[in-house]
Image (cartoon, rainbow, N blue to C red; front, side, top):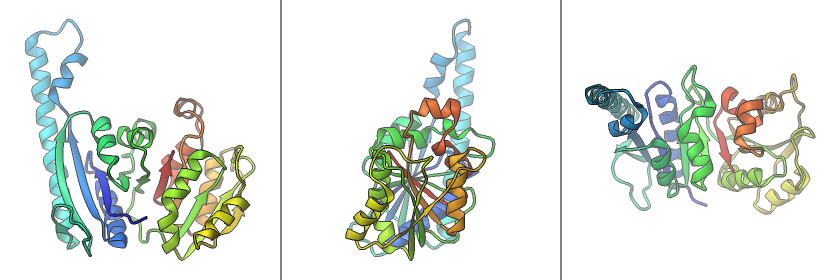
Length: 288
């Protein structure tokens, strides 16, 4: 499957540049178009949150402050995008059919970020989401979870620092679930171009479903010859063992299913998905 359109939701600037760098690397691999999307907060959404007991003047003041902050943020994100593409020689244009080079465009819309990003992601081959900013709980990343749960499309979480390489050494976290199978499907074109691929498996991670050996046979039919490695949890954290195994392989790309257990359970108790989202220093492709 060819990758032609990348969606990049940009909420702020703290992690935006690393995400832009990741998106540009992917776009140059596939001669793809990057649509950078900034969703502005609608100041009218503040009024229902204000609660009872506030005067009309107070609500109006809150709406004005929200609009001012939204405008300032939009200008900062647009300026970051323009500096980045100018500094990296990226052609800024509308998406072109069959372009032979990476291109980019910028769009601003107003509304609920989780709704609009999920809707736009449905017609993107891949959505690249910035890593949550320092101090932000990754479980509250609205754009990330909107794409995972409401777009039917894969998402690539960019690392906090721009990667040096992308997709040359790929790890597949396999546990036999439908979610991990969806991630394998999304990663197929990447694996077909990679220098090396490794399947990572663990008794503590595996659920009911095909084994790693079955996956290797399947990948062989697609011309991919991976090796396989088992890993163990570290301090009872399966996610920590998974990331350590990816580091041992010098991976620059990890593909895995997301939220085999419910998101609420992982929010309360932790889980592999949450650990990887919080701790990974390489791009992670997720699907469910």
